[in-house]
Amino acid sequence: MPHPFELEFELALPADPEQVWAAIATGPGIDSWFMGRNEVDPRVGGSASMETGGHRETSTVTAYEPGKRFATRTEPGGDGRFMAFEYLVEGRDGGSTVLRVVHSGVLGDDWADEYDALRRGWPFHLHTLREYLAHFAGRTGVPVFAVQPTADRPADRVRAALTAALALPSDPPTGSRVRADLAGLPPLDGELVWSDEERFAVRTADGLYSFLHPAGVVLLFHHLFAEPGPAAPAATAAPETAWQHWLSALVASVS
Image (cartoon, rainbow, N blue to C red; front, top):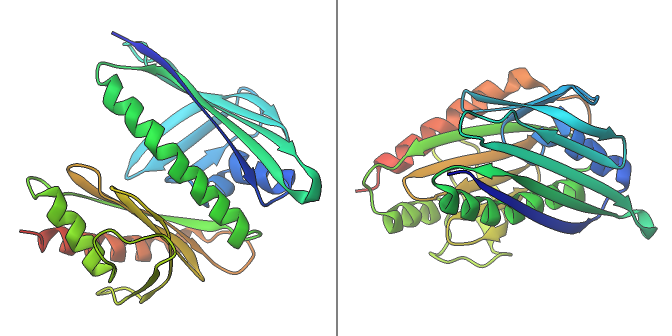
């Protein structure tokens, strides 16, 4: 049975409307804080796509008012499922902006778990958007994604392995300093900017690093920043491969 839903969020951002618009309505902007690699055809009726781990999802742009409103919607599936996203941008005094996000649609039989995952995931992604605009304005992020199933490994041991690798205590508070030597990767030196029961985020001088460990899997959603200028998509392969190797070895070490 299909289950309609709607989630709404509002947040103040330390950026002007033009910067926020670029972050939520262009492919390179979305790459810099959300998930996967994104493309946007900037017009009503155009396509917007996201590719994550080889899976590509395409939607149609249903509203495109530069600096004000951007919306997309996927085509309904055979069971009626679809996703719709709406972003409303409003400038405020002092060069700041208020962003309202509405995520709606229809979920399937596993709607309760899906809804809960969306409800918990959006605050994290919007926090990443704020970190991006506050600390990497004018830069383009290169997304790095890696995923590794954990099979029947106990969730508490997976979390313990992850916190140990990041040189953190089991329940680290935000603001903790992160200094970790990661095999096959450059050292991670930064600040823990998000910490909850299933994810961590670290901000360094050159990137935003997200580590998620929901039941049965560990995922990495990183955003790496070069100096101001155009993105260099060809540079994504090497870091993505290195992070996948690191993640596979981490999970394999858990007994």
